Image (cartoon, rainbow, N blue to C red; front, side, top):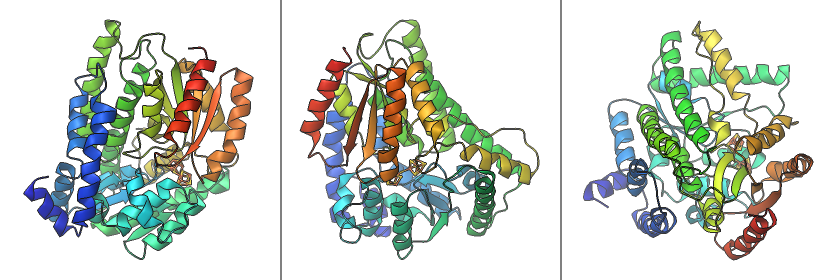
Length: 425
Ligand code: BJ8
């Protein structure tokens, strides 16, 4: 921790004592979960560096941007159309929401039986331990689930918040509502930044964000190979970092990593033997530094080859059409692209069920682990439909409901071991 960083955190009104505890805990965890892996691609060095200085260099960049008059916009969901931020010269950042560390402080205000993602995100603001929240000028929330939307009301007492209404059906009426929400966000961002969003800067922003999506698609396509050239944990980290790194630098780093993985594939090299069980994880998102399930599965001798999740395929599978056109046309294209996301907040949500079966086949998964954050009722209930579809498709499923604590690690390990035995690997 450099003196310069400490000075910056103090200026951001960070609770330095608590923050030290957080960062001091993260180093050994990262060593244990990440740096101890064998045969990692050299291209992961950049991502190790980013995590090694997780609250340093990127926060400095954002602050610099703010000092020059730019704005920083915090988000918690892949429904927020980041193109609008980049187009207006603002920087969108996915905010920290993935650790038990910030949960107890949140429970002083929110009910304990609330999903860990909601508590963790709220706890970071309440406890003043996340410099990204402190740096952001505005947080864009959404109404994807009841817990989140109520949390945003309480968060709004402490931080500027704008909430987008995400409809829960994909009817023509719902699409019209969403289109209005996207147009409304354009106005909000313009007002925040003092910059106009034009057809030209929006087209440019769309290209930049699509380029990162293509890079992530490339990375995931490489995970279809056997042997798999990168661990699930490393691929997860790349996805997590993509939520707060600069979009162009991130695209370039992911592509550089993929160049290396291409060579591995050509040489038939992998991080695990060809015959290890291949697992698709589906369900709730995993915000940084939530590495719990991947670590348990890969420590048990399997490879996580794909995430049907907002930290995985839901974040990059669909591109915004780059047909140009006028501003209205582009806003319609953006609204349409985001409405394709198959979040469990939608009813019905057959698209997600179809995605899981299709992805399990494409990635040659031997089994699916359905990951459900405790108290997330949409995913928990939808799991029954996932189970039925996978049974029909003959794909084994393990349903896991957990939170961010390590209390159930032993029990989960036993269940994962038993599942791997059943799928015959
Ligand atoms: S588009 S999955 S990122 S809402 S917070 S719904 S886990 S109870 S995160 Fe999500 Fe957007 Fe959907 Fe994706 Fe459940 Fe928790 Fe709610 Fe959650």
